[in-house]
Each structure stands twice: as structure tokens, then as C-alpha cells.
Amino acid sequence: MKYKFKKIDVVIVVIMVVIAGFVLYKYGYVPEPEKPDLPDIEFIKDEENRLLTVKSVSGKVFWSDIAIEGNCEKSILGGYIKEGDQIIDCVGTIVIRHIPTDTLLYTYKFAPIPQLPSSPFIPGYMRDVSPQDEGVHFNSILNLREWWYYTVIFSEDSDLAGWTATIGFCHMAWGDLRLTFKPDILVVTLHSPDGKEYGGLINKQRGKILGLFGGKTLEAKSPGVDLKYGDSWASGEAPNWHIHAEDKDIDKEHDIIMDLDFFAPSSPFWIHSNRLFDQGEGNIANYIFTGCEVTGDVTIDGLKYEVKGVGHHEHSWSLGVVKFAIHGWDWNHITLGNGWNIYYSKYSLTRQRLQTSTSKINPFASLIITTDKGETLTQLKDIDVTIKASDKLFLLLKMPIEMKVTAKPDNTQMLLKTYNIKLEINILTENAYDKTWKFPTYLGMNIGMSMITGKVSWTDDDGDHEIELNGTGTIWNMRKF
Image (cartoon, rainbow, N blue to C red; front, side, top):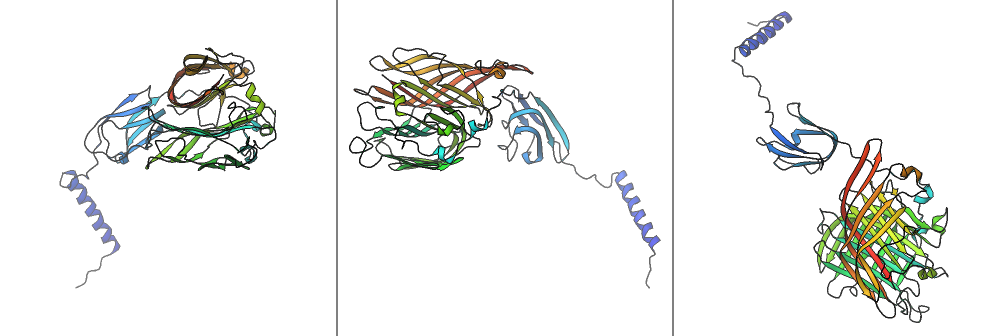
């Protein structure tokens, strides 16, 4: 016998099944579907350091089950949540949710980061460098002095955490190293926070007879950076360069090889030029790329270390006769713990014997702050320098080992002056390579690592601001008798 169901019969059966299921569930015969447990997580908020730290967590909870919304850094989180895990660089409102239960756990509010006012109205030609500008200038009959140098401070997640490196290709003018025919300089230095030092400086003879005949020590071509000094070389065009540095003559006790790639995320800036508009056409000029991203490897005595960090690249040239006016310089490329970078340089136009401070009226002093790797710049032109401690070189000549630099806008920077910006930093030479040429040259150089402390303050529509500054710098000092 076959039974035929009509549509109405099917509908009645379905309704009866649903009613039966409801009755069984109502009286507890059918268990309620299991829901995920709501985790018990406790955070500690650190407003000053802008972070949230896990104080405690119940059971095993994955970070993948937690949604973190807002401006913060959470890429370092993974796997199970554990005590001590941190959500860092928190700005504004941070919302934490449990994804499986779609539950809001916490809402934390952090103050916004105050923004340092930047220099307005920087004309485009001040931030434009051509491949020809990057190339060689010392082949002029005016006997130019020309330097290309790269510096880097390796980051904490590098194999050489906190170390600094300086690589310089230097074509000196005749007479810079008085009564010597070895004016071309190669610098390859490595310095560690705990006092280790590798490399140094070497100057080699440019030609066989007064540099007029024979091979060149430093070879340079255009366009772009195309340098060769022995087995060391640098090549590339903005924003990318590769530097290979090695020279067994520099460090007799150690073998050093550096292969570093520099990438400049922002446009350069002309520090000086004796040309008003076409900066690169000047015969006295220099520009910098600041906040460069650096990757590569360093090999010391056969052991290879992977490195990355923040670097600077500077290129400068000047007339040979300028050497008679320059009696010293201080260069500092600084990377701060908060991600800011500072460039500070000063050329001394007076003899440095027994000097403890420099004049405020010095057109050859520069200080630039960037909070975003060179995208925006804050240039402070009123600069005062006090030498707090020095080491004697020879005769009455001293090399600074601690300096206090104070900077603020000058009277030509009326808009910046309204913010009442004031920077104070202390630069302490921590670990440096010293090179001295005695009789008859009487010239000394100091190249290496410095430690930076200080503060910057300003006033804007949100009130008064003061930020403590701490970081590491690469230094290059010169003093000439």
C-alpha cells in the first residue's frame, strides 16, 4: 500500500516537529547550544609611555580572538595572551573586543601626541636634488673639496643593536692636511654601546707627483653617486644607494666588510649653497637625506650580522680656498627614541684654542628636526653652543667631548617664533675613533657615537608642551690649529 502526502500534510508534520522541539527545550530535555566563554583579561594603562600591559588573563586565550581598534602598534602580539604582553604606541581611543562573543571588553583613552610645528613655506628648489647634483664636483679647476658620507644607528631588533656606523668618501683640498700629499680619506667605523670599536680612517696619496700624475685614490663619476676607493664603493641615485665598505689597511687587527642599502623615504634638504635658486650650481653647497631606512649586513672577522636601522646621507663640496676660513666643524646625525631625527652641524670660523663656546652670530650653524623621517622639517636658526668638556689634542688645541646646544627660531622665522619653540640637547661623546695629524699639520678628527639627552618645548592652541628627548647620534668633529 502506498501513502500519498499532500502538501498540507507536510506542513502539519513540520509544525508538529517544531512544537515538539520547543516543548522539549523548554522543559530542559534539549541542552542549550554551548557559547564561548568570555575571557577575563586585565590590562594596566601607562599614559606616559602610551602602552597597555596585560596584568592577568584567565585560561588560554588567543590574540587572534581579540579585536584591537584604534591607533596603536599590535604587530608584536601573537599566539596565546600572556602576562606582560604589551600594546604599544597608543594614541587616542583604543577599543578592545572579544570576537567569538562579540563583546566589548574595554575602552581606553590616551591623549593625542602633540605635533611639533614645522617650518612653513619651504620652497620646492630647497628640497630638490638632481642626479647631477649627486655626482662629482671636485674635477673643477677650482680644486674643490668634496665629501660623501653615510651614517646609521642600528635598531634594537638588529644583530648589532644600538651600534653606529660611519662610511665616508672624502676628497680633501690640497693643504687641508698641511704639507702632506695624501689628502684622499676613507672612513669606515663601527662603534658599540659597550665600548667596542672597529675600523677607523686612512688617507692615501692621490698621485705620484704632487697629485698631478699617477692614479687617483678616490674615483668619482656622474650622474648619481658613483664612488670607488680601493675595495670600497658606493653607487645609486636618490632615493636608493648601496654602500660596500672594506679596507684592511684601516684596522690592522680586524677584518670589516659592510654592505648596506640606504632608502630615503623623503626629499632631501639643502643646508647651504652660495646660489640663491639653483642650489646644486653653487661651488659651496651641501644637502642631507635624513631618516633613511637602512638594511644589510656587517661582517666582522668572518662573522656576519644582519642589521637594519635609521641613517643619514650627506654630500658637501666647497672651494679649496675655503680651508683658510674653516678652523673646525661639528656634525651630529641623531636618532631619538621617539622616532624623531635631528641634524646638527656647525663650522667654526675662528681658531678653537681655549674656546668654550661659539658665537650666536654664525651663518654656518644648522639644526633641523624631523618627526616623520624628513617629510616635514623644523629648522631652528638661532643656535647657541657651549663646550662643557674637552680633551686636549696638542698645543692649545682641544677637541669637544660634551656640548650643550640650544636652538630656537630667529627673527627671520616670524611664524615659528609665535610657537615659542626652544630646543636644548646635551651631546656627549660616548665612543669615538680619534685621528690626529701632528707636526706640521696639527689637525684632529673625532668620529663615532654620542649619547643625546634634552628636551624641546613649544606652545600652540592646545597649550604648553614639553617633550623629553633621549637618543643616539653619530658624530664627526674636526679641529685645526
